[in-house]
Length: 175
Image (cartoon, rainbow, N blue to C red):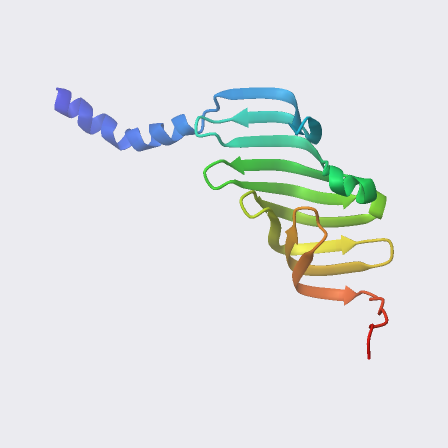
């Protein structure tokens, strides 16, 4: 009888184990996080819903609003704002995946990036995507596919750019 029970239940064990991993340890609505570094506000995160899992992974959904403060940079450029539909954090890989009408902006500079999905590698501190993107500033709009950028968005590479950008040429010293 025990053997028969074991044979009947065995095919369902992997499915149950997977279901158990997907059950959050913590769920909340109207989530808000204030992060500090060296006693100063370094980031704010807001979302309609937050779920945290046993393995440390976190998902945020609905009205994601992130503001990143880098106080050295803020004096000149201001904070970075990110709006999206969902955010998934993989603790083991130290990756954040931001999806759903992703809009990244530096309002004081009139600089923005729009895409469907953006990844953030927390180890290397880089933002990247392979999907179509639109980068706009006060004077230019550049479209392309694929982006790799520093966390503060001061340096970036577009894999397949298209569009027109005016580059100011400066006089070279010497010669």
